[in-house]
Amino acid sequence: MYVSNLSFHTTDEDLKNLFSDFGEVSSSKVITDRETGRSRGFGFVEMPEDADAKKAMEELDGKDIEGRALSVTVARPKEQRSGGSSFSQNRKRW
View 1 (cartoon, rainbow, N blue to C red):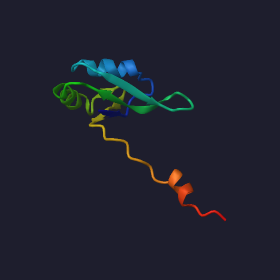
View 2 (cartoon, rainbow, N blue to C red):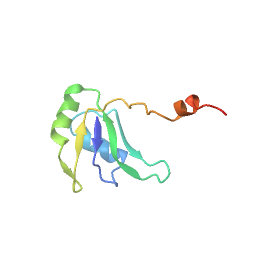
View 3 (cartoon, rainbow, N blue to C red):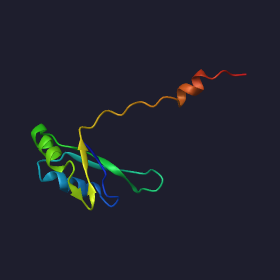
């Protein structure tokens, strides 16, 4: 699950504890900035039981946690970015 609008003070353990009320949590991760280590305000939670995950999404989506309304949705695979190495491969050399 993709969880956004998290407080910048939320830790991996806080996220796990929040979702564990609905069943077993196999992983929880708050995404942090590479340079500062500060939370980016979103994270991911995995639960092995679909029924538990669905219940958690229903109950926690829109719930106010530390003054912020959580958004909990099904996580989608990361899309590849365009540009980057393809730019350098397509560039003509003079």
